[in-house]
Length: 146
Image 1 (cartoon, rainbow, N blue to C red):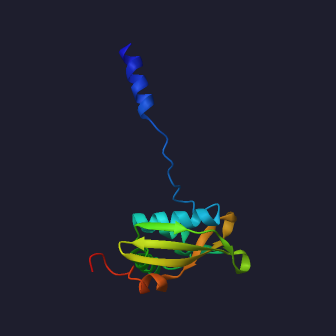
Image 2 (cartoon, rainbow, N blue to C red):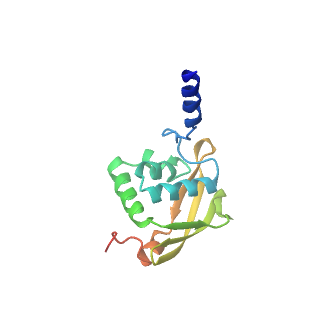
Image 3 (spheres, one colour):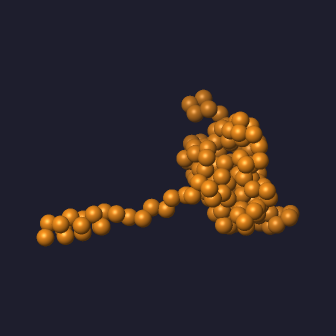
């Protein structure tokens, strides 16, 4: 009887956790790649950010030297720090791109930034670009506490 009770406790305590496949880059939809990109930025996760930043050829991390990619990701992570990000509705862009306006807030700082997504290999979507200058101009790229 004790074994059955223990088994029930263990089964009840277990839950399924979605784990991101590190080999899978990009996302299935334009909105999902923006959401994942922002979540990676908020978590300050360079690997996850690199998995969703790319172009029609795939993730940039697979196209550029590692040191160049890492420096770029560090700058992006610093500028993309945020308390809240609200993603607007998509707007069609050139060449099948989808653009999203994102309202950021970080403490007293507020900025609206345009993100552009593009479809790459295996029908996966990537964040191709975002307006980092808008974040710089609004104080997002300053070091914490500066």
